[in-house]
Amino acid sequence: MKRKVYITILGKEVLPVYYPIEVFSVTEIYVIGTEENHNGNVYASLENYCKSQGYKIHFIQVEAYNILSTMTECERIHSMFDKDTEFLYNITGGTKIMALGAYRIAINNNASIIYTNSKEYIDLNTYETKHLSCRLSNEAIFKLQGQELKSYTKWDNSNEYESIIASRMIRAFIIGHYSEYKELSDHFLQYQIIPNSYQTRSLSYSFIDGQLQVEKDGIEILSIYSSNAKELLFRGRWWECLVAEAISNWSNGQYEIWHSVVFKTTNSTYVHPQYNILKNEVDILVNIGNTIVFVECKSGSLTQNEIFKMDYIKKTYGSDKSKSVLITFRPLNADLKDKAIESRISFISPKKREQDVLQIIPDKMDEIVNSLTL
Image (tube, rainbow, N blue to C red):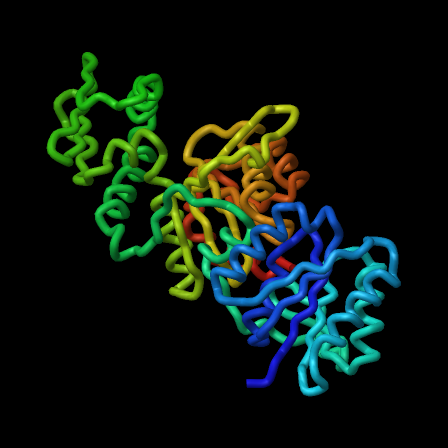
């Protein structure tokens, strides 16, 4: 097999560096970067993952704003190989000076040159824009970004049938008996573990052998069978479940969807300096093709803090190319909409209380995905 050497400049993002490795079937990797790059998490994650996949990877240190430093090192790499070796340059990352230095040496040696993002790459020899054929799994993306997963569940509508049916019934119950739902939910929010029974003068609640039942004045107003019925009803999982179903139907098998995602926290986990917020859970996560969309589902009241948390999720577990989306059961007020827009968070919410937002999720998700100029 003909040798293909990949020379790439490392910046703040690891994914644009890695995509061409799979697309172009390179045999050896040379990463051009600064001392800061070499000592940082981005290169460490890239190196660990590449080695786990069987690639030879080397780090070449240069000065960020010394063009001759980059040119000299690139020329040295060329001198190590015979004339039949193919060279591919990726000048997406690093400083402009580093990119210009690498570009000049690539031109001098008739090497291929690309600039890439998560959707496509520009062939700088022909100036054509071409589609990136590789698609990384969620696991690969998070390993490359240096994050560790604690737990998650891959969403499949057929596997979640029981929860979906129960969630539909809970939704109808909340719409038709909101005051009774509010009484129960307000009461149980104070408990770490939700009790299996509760009774007032007119309201009776019980959870026995997977059956959750609510009666008012002796008349049944809710009866569902599900092992996680209490979580669905009282912790808002019912809305997460229905949103996941709607996103899965929209995806139609095209995208990888996870739910109830929990990341391990580390010393480097992002914490907002003003609000001291740390959030390591994500309701729904969608891989739309080497780009992660984080979805937060809110069935009840919402505060400005929730908007902040969503921004932190993207900063901590995503990248500049990721997207956060808020999907609410109730309408968003104008202040929260403004705060979401300011934080570059997309939102899907009903305009009126009676509108079924689940019906507009497909069109809204199309708009969000199509708007991602990555």
